[in-house]
Length: 371
Image (cartoon, rainbow, N blue to C red; front, side, top):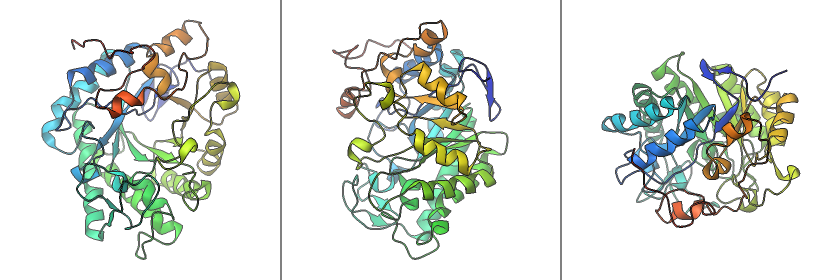
């Protein structure tokens, strides 16, 4: 029987356990998207805390796809040396590091006029975007591939395409947000085309020996948008194409209490809220390693999902903001539930430009970082 704290191999990466730090926006890059000393310290502490794999915060692949001004960039060659510092910090602590790469599309806020599959209003959009041309779509595909190449050169262990939470890959898949009548819209096959082209371009750039994963929304929880049927189709297509792992998520900024980060995870029954969606993706692509995210707080809940064969790895976001050493605590025999109270307070300082922190443990702000 598989166990959480056993070594395993995921897409060639040797992991010391099955716990994953899910991509989490730290809000600690500079105005150019460069890595800062403070951000390096976050990754070093996560690795020392014992997590098996770290997935970075979402890194933008071109300026028009950028969201906040303190988002990490992977869109220029001169950023590679700073990105290498993140990889080195994770490796010093014994954890592989996968970079999440994204184009925010209609949810981008740094662009003068955001672009998206279609010029439609939608929950989570700050304003109506303009419709991308076919030539622009090809340019974005190339931007993903170039970003992946930079991250490989920087020493990262893999990349994860952000196909969740209402960003551009998810926008193309969504019938609510994609009203195109060309090869990128209409049928489910056409709506899945952009994500597959991005995957194939990235794979062509980095080769077969470099892990390429995806974070996939199995349901947007928006009326008329992506459901498990759409996500299962894309999961099957990516499995055939050779995707190395799928992280199952859901929700968008317009989904209210059914978004990706849900409040008030008070009981076992509140945990693993994307578990039903994970079952659909597992059935669609049983050969692909599955990572589950969403309200995981208890080791026994995680173990029950592993024992049931519904997921292979388990992603944590907010618990590791409050308690970066949680994996070590659990591994040493202290099986108490994660200390995180699921209040969502950690994202307030980030939105104010102060950087990510747990307001319960660091109410006055983060300590000085000397890294």
